[in-house]
Image (cartoon, rainbow, N blue to C red; front, side, top):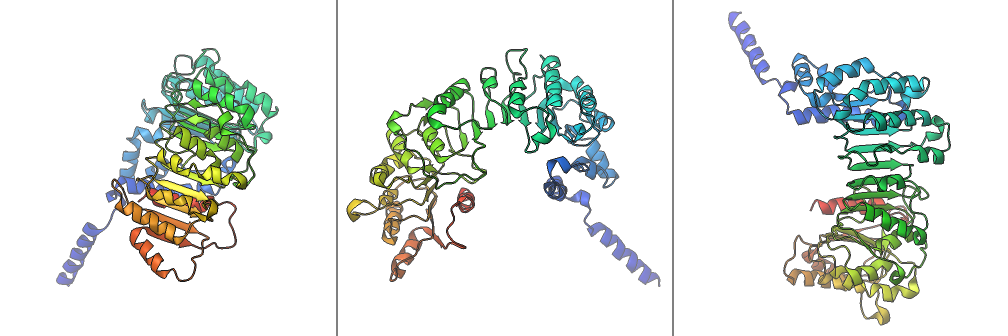
Length: 493
């Protein structure tokens, strides 16, 4: 009996020593586990319905005594105040402010507190946060009623003067349900949003401004140090009339690094096959901006073509936001790229059909010159482009054998005017060239190989990483998802 008991005790001790306690896991893994569990539930709910969501430190502090000690001793956990509840949790956030010590604060205000008692709750939020103006790092609002919106930002402008030295980000979003919360027309509401009007300039650290549904003109003279700016409204409508305004906007913000312009007339994914207006490139005035590295133009193709053909951006790396599917610009911009070499640092470019077949020969004749001005290009996408040269003399695509030596991926989406021999020739030329980086990856879609080309195909696979994909479910008018997937694969190479 004694030996059996001692054996059981020994096994229990061994089990206790070998057991995996949650506290032994790396902290980053724990954060990931809890974040994924709680974020999945958040994404299922609309913003106005997120009433009882739990904040990660609150969840973690309830795991055990050890975790609670660690969580309470970490000020960064308590430096985010989100007002999404019908009644602002003022007492709870007073405790959070004490725990956060002197760290910068990130504040979000949603519409939920103002469904019934709007001004009362707005004043309660201001009484809680106003003594900490010196700590504000960001302020974000979503779908606030007009009266509440003005009360909050009027108070920020008046009492925050000289105290908002750490404020870096302001994000104001009308929200898709703004009509439900606002009692005034949206145009009047936009005119009333003029924070910091009593100072003549914005807070010194303010770098990031995201406006969803508000006018940007008021800010251009006050916020010359901006580095990130998002404008989500009807900003670019008629390219011929708005181009000078766009140039003036960039000229006023010489430190701007990231700009997103979203034309709300266009759907979530613009139609890439709409027939653009023909605007002679020679008649478009040029503007230079040295700081811009990312430019997102979510607008009709004519607008994108006109703006891109008017800019010289020596440090631009992405013509449109790489976090979304990259909308195309027309091959009609090739003459601008060939003549001016405006984007020498460009990493990714997507070109689409010009819809002007009579001028296709002239336009595609600029392809090699355009590529010569893109030495850093890694991903090149052609969308419904015809590469055939007049008289059947070959393919314009052949110039890729000697251009863009850093190119990692060539994507051909439903293109014509090239053959398997053209691709083999490109692979052979690039294999013999000096200064090449990673092997070229060629992805083609909706392209049928002619019979009897097995040998050429095998030769091509020896030279490059070749992938041929068939269309499923018919022709895709919007190849955004396909291109985005290939873009991500290529950036990981």
